[in-house]
Image (tube, rainbow, N blue to C red):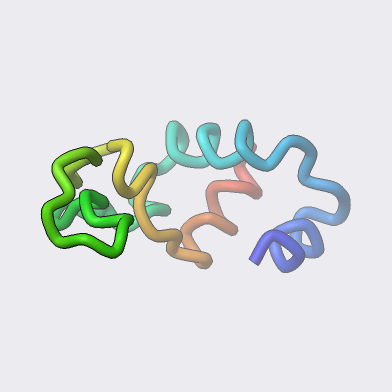
Length: 79
């Protein structure tokens, strides 16, 4: 996806993490907000209690959410 964004922008994207947050600030609908679920069970046991729940907006379980390429492309062009 980043290769396609770079090609559309006509060059390098730079620091991708910073770009993601700039895109989020410009148009947070470029990411599909994941509001259900968690990352509690990262071990083989089922009694995991550490981890994070998905919430509205940014969260430690799902970050910014899942990307919407077309909206990300539009937001990248506006930066």
